[in-house]
Image (tube, rainbow, N blue to C red; front, side, top):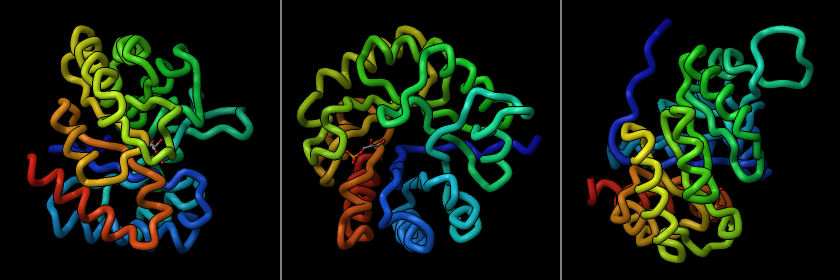
Length: 232
Ligand code: G3P
């Protein structure tokens, strides 16, 4: 099986969610803006389009692409499920799991992380509390994102509003899984929000509304990437 390239440095992960402005052709336009930012800044940018756009986005840009979810099933008689092998086959290199808008249970998280290993995909599991982050670390994902649901889409950054959640989560995760990459997301809007997240000890951020809903996603992303590269 082909090895996936390592995800180096601090990550800027842009998830397109189910926003209509990031669907179809517009998903490709947004991914192209992200590609320009990655090229100009040298920062590793990951885009997370909807399932239906994974193939087109993967084929249109030279960027790391993740899916938004996958199901804990092996190839076989399952209807309406998303296979790890299927997202891999259309160009995804990893997947989000357990996002607060797509929660799964701890057992499913463990199975999905194993499915990612089987299919040679990166696993990025979201956690809403320090305690759940520590439990998730036991499933040995590649990455954990700390995301308090109440701040998602709020424009109020987790890094400024809940710094103690981030530092507490990092401490608890490190006690279980020293090598997992730790990120955060929710409400991250400005370059200062990004810098603060990194100062707190995270290795990257997940962003959505501040970029996807902006009139000028290129400018927003570019400022975030500059914030990252100036701290790396
Ligand atoms: O996974 C990232 C996401 O939940 C953050 O959303 O809109 O607060 O940047 P947003």
